[in-house]
Image 1 (tube, rainbow, N blue to C red):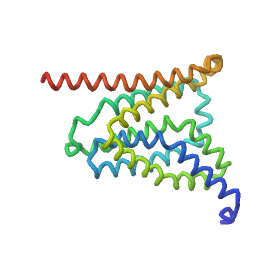
Image 2 (cartoon, rainbow, N blue to C red):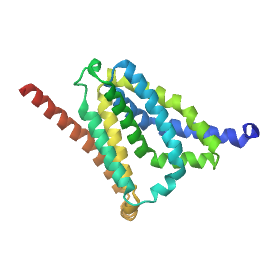
Image 3 (cartoon, rainbow, N blue to C red):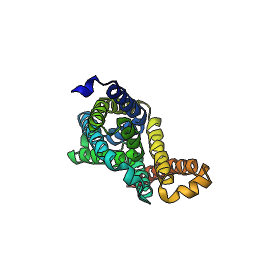
Image 4 (tube, rainbow, N blue to C red):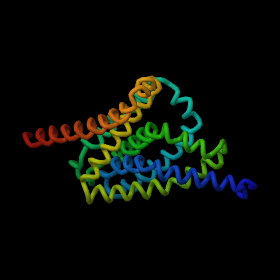
Length: 229
């Protein structure tokens, strides 16, 4: 237990917790969007299990993140998957009553949280791994402390989304923005983006527009179909 008395250990721990506070904002948005249409009891379960599993996944991902990011087209595929997740989360809306949700909806919410966190964490875990400086104990402890922070952030976002529907659209736009950034960051596009730095922001903006525009169009289509039925 000598490492607990090390100043470097505590500094590294503070770094990891702080990094996660900064970088977990978008993850909290995804968790809130995925859980918002569930009944209150299932919302709490989705936030708890989704947050906990996402952090465990992030620990495992840290070990191989650097190698994964070196693979061409991986971030393009991940970004496209994130676009689809953002589109689904927005287009689902609140048409169904929370009481009619089934247990399968809870599992679907947790699955969505895990997939989105996997994609969105590829870059984030590198910063965490650097702060841990090879210490597995520091890595696991730092991320474990981050779990309640993510849970609190997600719970707060759900309450805000219920009160201010505009936040749902902004949250979906954020997912689309991150998706665009993920695609632009792929190694296969490094040369092109390096020559034209503005493409990074163009891709991010297009991602946000695709998710919000596509989701809204799908919502209107479903509304018209229900009205005609």
